[in-house]
Image 1 (cartoon, rainbow, N blue to C red):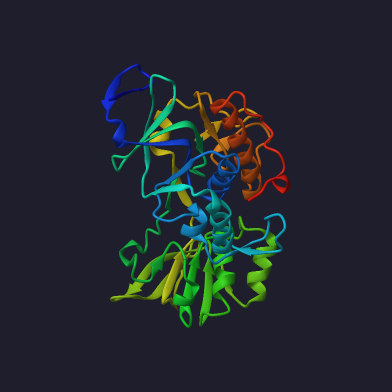
Image 2: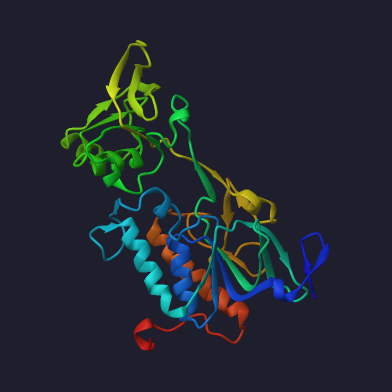
Length: 343
């Protein structure tokens, strides 16, 4: 039996056979987490990656696997799903263990100070260091009030397979990058695409807006989707002008609600981490205020933070290398160049 002690000093007994033992536990299987898995393996560390989602890739796999990403170093453009596949393949030689469909629920420490993370599925992982790469935490789409009854019957929040909407009339709701990216992706294959936004100002990048205009997408501003109409499947969307209250009906076999997401750190916010605006404060080592707990990627915050995938890669490498020196104080912080290693 081993004692697991939480921050209050309380403890309980857990059979060793019930606990998965690993060197590094990475919480979050998005790009930063997957790159961290590679780097932990590169350093000769056993690594476990945990994620509440049932698949690898985090928000990319859940939200935009087909969308091109333009700000990854060395790639003019890379499809989201291909980026995830490449990161998984990069880590594969080091045989990371993946614990998917598990939410990190509770953090405790054993008598030797090693973190132990329990999941909502009853699993427990004892690690010599933890790296949190949970992006924005657990995310849920902002609902489209006018159409919740049609969820799964034409109303979608994600477009994992654009071909499923080929030949359909599509209405995209929203004014951010996701809305315009979906409109641009679907315009060449859909019968028609109409984009509806509640104001004349868009959050999307200006180049994305111009691209969608050039594709012939009708952009309706100062308006909102006020009602979805149909039987077993949505057939029409009612669009209402916010000032005049005039309405019109447009054909809609698919309605993509790209209204943003509600982020929830969930149990992590009760672990005693130093949080600022739902972000984890870290130092230059990517260390949190908790012993042996590091963080990287969009979930972190520090002066000058820039939330890009490319930045998350560097932070993951920094976190893992600093974790390696905590695991083994004799280890060097700099791991050497990958070109000097035999794979």
